[in-house]
Every structure is written in structure tokens, then in C-alpha cells.
Image (spheres, helix red, strand yellow):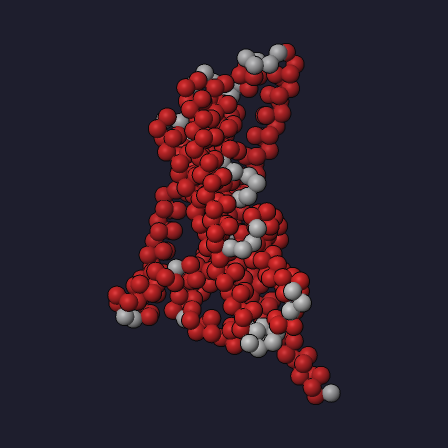
Amino acid sequence: MKQGLASLFILGIFLLAFFVLRPIIIPIIFGLLFGYIFSPVYKRIKRLLGGSNISAFILLGSLTVLIVVPLIFLIPMLGRQIFEIYVLLQNTNFSEILGRFFEGDLATSLAIHIDNIFGNIFPVLVGGVSDFLRDLPVFLLQFAVFLFTFFFALRDLDKLTAFLSDLSPFSKSTAKKFLEEFRGITNAIVFGQVLIGIVQGLALGAALLFLGVPKALLLTVITSIVSIIPVLGSWLVWLPLGIILLATGKVFSGIFIILYGALFVSLIDNFLRPYFLSKRSNLPIVLSVIGTIGGLFVFGIAGLLLGPLILAYVLIILDFYKQGKLNELFTPR
């Protein structure tokens, strides 16, 4: 009886802890993840300065400045450019432009559909901005949780790793495999997804600035975002943009953007992403893409890492099962 009550008490405590952490679990995950990613930098700073707290604080402050300062300047610029594009599209006669390529009712019908698409997109964007401003205090609190977690993840990463290793029910060899897969997938996501997406955005942005295309900053940010997400890609920006430039009489700029996007920007993704994904993780590229997409649906932005990681762990367990060594998952070795 007492044992049953004790078990219920422990279960209740863990459930309460879950509900306490649920609103801030994503900032905590990202704080731990950034702590892992930047741990080599932290260790170099610590070797130079010697102190754990001051080394973690310097890295934390530097990262905060690198994130916050650009956002202070970029967010107002992006807001202005979104509004200016909205006004431009409202004043654009798509029937006239499409009439150069299509005849009669087809051009009119296409123009109506395009107007409806843009008419639905911009209210969503405006609503998103309104929601962000309304939830700004919550965002700032979550950002504070992220910074707090990041600081202690940097400073106490070795202790945290040892603590989790002691708690793990798996054998040492299994825990080592899980840790290696976590390290490989984390590096693959950072370099194969996020970094390459940013590079693609900057590559297209440089061409836009060279050609003098308006709203280059907004288009650069959008390109980076769609390039990070699998299945989408930079073509969602450079292809429509090239067609619009051609339709508005800017033939050289339109042809240049389409060729540059197809032969350079997209090739960055086609060559480097599979290289990083296959070199840094044992997870097949197909499962990595599927895991990333499914993870985004289930976990949001954290799914970029959690989706592929879960599938990788499933493959490890299936590999043990196939070899008839499933009991070795938990056998101390």
C-alpha cells in the first residue's frame, strides 16, 4: 500500500514537473543544443582565460550581441519592405502583364488567381506580425530561459553528460552509439541544413544587390528560410522572381537570375547538403529528409533536429534486433 502511494506520489511529481517545463521546453532544448554546438569555442576561450564562468559569459554575451543587434536593424527594414511590396502588388496590373504571354480570358483568369493569392498571403503576414508583438513579453521570457540554459550548458556540459550517462538504462556501448549519432545528426543539421540554407540566401542576395533588384534584404531572408526546409528550396524565390523580371521587361536581369539560381544557388544545396548529411551521420539521406519534415510538423522548429534523431535511434534499435542482440541494449558492457 505504502509502496503504491509512493509510486503515485513520484509519478505526480514528474507530471507536475512536465507541466511546469512544457511552456519553456523549446528554449531549454535550444539552449542545450547551442551549448553543445558552441562547446569547442567555449573550451578554446577557457584555455585562454582560465575561468569557467567568465569564459561562458563572454561567449554568451558575444552570441547575444550577434543575434540581437542585427535583429534591431533588420526587423524594421523587413517590415517596411513587406509593406512596400504589398503596395506595389496592389498597384500592379497582372492582366496587362499576363496578356503579353496569354490570350483573352486565360490572362484575366490567371490575374484574378494571382490577386487572390497575394490577397490571402499578406493578411497572414500582418496577422503574424500582430501576434508577434502581442506575444513579445512571452518571447523575451523564453529568450531569457534560452540564455540561462545556454550559459549552464556551456559551463557544465561535461557534468551534464556524465549525469545523463549514469542515468541511462542502456549499456555503455549502446549509449556511446546514441551519443555518436546525436553528435553526427546535430552537425549534419547545423552544416547540412541551416548553414547551407543561409549560404544560399546570401548567394542569391549578392546577385540581387548586383542587379539592383529592389527588396533584396527581404528576398534574401525568405530564400534562407525556404532553403533550410527540405523539399522546398531557393527555387521558390529565384524562379518566380526571374519570371516577374522577364514579364516586366527586365530581360537581362530575369535571364541572369534564372541561370544563376539554377546553375549556382541550387547546386550549393544539391552537392553540399547530401555530403554533410551522409558524412556526419549514418542516417540515410531519404530518412533524414523524411524525419526533418515530420519533425517540423510534430515539434515545430525543434523538429529539424528531433525528427532525424528519433529515426536514427529507431534504426540503431532495429539493427540490434536484426543481429539478434536486442538484449545487449541494456546489458552492461
